[in-house]
Each structure stands twice: as C-alpha cells, then as structure tokens.
Length: 246
Image (cartoon, rainbow, N blue to C red):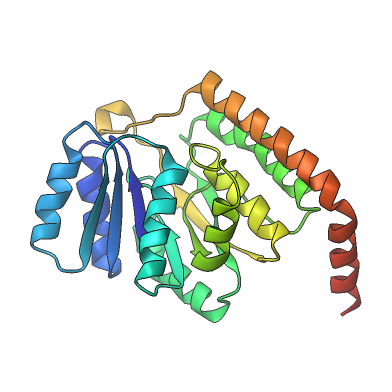
C-alpha cells in the first residue's frame, strides 16, 4: 500500500503504525515535508523490513507523490496499490477488506465512499457534492460514488498510463481526475463505504486545503474534463448501450 505524505506532523507515525498493523508492505512517499516527519518515518523503517520510505526532495503535490510511488511499485512487479492519506483521516482497519475486494475484481478501481461523522465540517461535506456531480456527468454516470476520497485501490498499469499521458493530476486535482480518466479508459468503479474522520487542530489535525486555490484548481480541472467528455461522448454512449444489451 502507498501513503503520500506532506507535513502531516506526528499523525504520520500513528497512521503508518496503524497501516502496518493491518498490511505489509507499506510504502510512504514523503513529498518534500519540512516538519521532521521524514526523519521519524525513516527511524520506523530502520526497524521494519516491510516499511519503505521514499523521500522526494521538494513538494510536488499529492498526485506527483502517488505517481512516484506507483512507478516504483510497478518496477517491483506490484499490480495494485491502495492509497491512504497520512493525516489519519482514513480507516486503516478497512485496508484488508479493500484489498480483498480488489483481488476479487482486479480490473476495477475500489473507491472508498465516505461515511461522515456528525461533527464533519459542513463546508467539506457539502462542497464535495459539486465535484461528485461533475465527475459523474463526465463519465456518463458510470457509478463513481465519490470522486475526492483518497482511500482507494488502483490497478497500477492503467493508472500510470493515464498519468503519464499528460501533465495534470499532480496536485489536489489527482483524486477526482484519476477516477474520471480511469473510467474513460474502461476501468469500472467498485464503491465500498468507509468512515472518514476530521481531526481538530487540538487533536493534531493538519489540513493543507486552501479554499480559493484548490477550488480554482478543481474548477479548471472539471473544465478540462468536460471538454474531454464532449469529445468522448459518442464512444461513452456506445459503451453504455453495449453494456445494457449484454
């Protein structure tokens, strides 16, 4: 499994320990962190042969970190990667369940569909509905349960193909653009419920979400994807009709 990590603070060690308790191997891609977490994680890896730390020299974005990790995984012969955020929001106890689902349907991307607690920030919960609506339109309602939740299993080969075909999908736009482009490539989604937890700052919670910057990035991303959707619309309609006839 693969954990992209950028300045998560002490949550990184807790997240990695929880992941290692459920799965092996675990790889962490430190995306130019400056908070000392890289050194802490390397200390953990020194005593754990199933934990590998890949350190990028400067921050390049979540998508770039996943690309680096997935490329390294492919070079080692791995066919699938489960991605888990380093900030502790994702349910490590469901790693095995998601991996089993992927093993049962290896051609699919296994997408976490978030289950929010009552104290989840309303702005985050409601704001993602816009991105989800666009992602489903752009894939002609192929069944994407949630476009933004990063707890998911990817088939490595098609993921690398779509990422290497363009220069986008390197930052916050990675998660939604990945599912749309993989759906265009014929990778079916499999949705599984998964709780998400937002930690307050007093609990060590860290968020790098910038409302203006990241929503501008998502707007530009969906503009690109909608134009791509229009170009692919005849093929998508044909695929949908063929699927219904089978």
